[in-house]
Image (cartoon, rainbow, N blue to C red; front, top):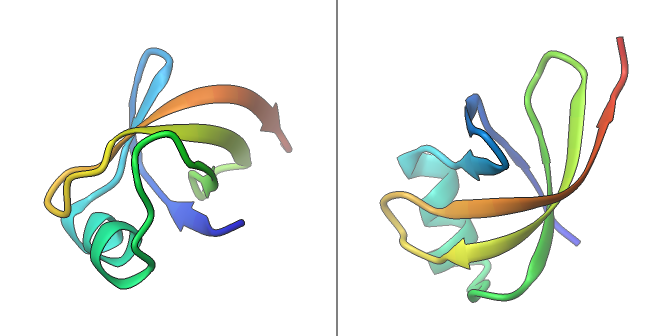
Length: 69
């Protein structure tokens, strides 16, 4: 599994910025439906499913979340 950094959260979805999205979709060639991990830099660790594999703005659906304060 790959781990991505995100600061964008919208409810139960995570948004990867353009650099992370490009790395996810173009470099690692992940596709919609694949599971990935994400961290938010403030203690959040997420297991998520790729629901939109766009190299400019990748969207992930949160499946599970763990906060480490």
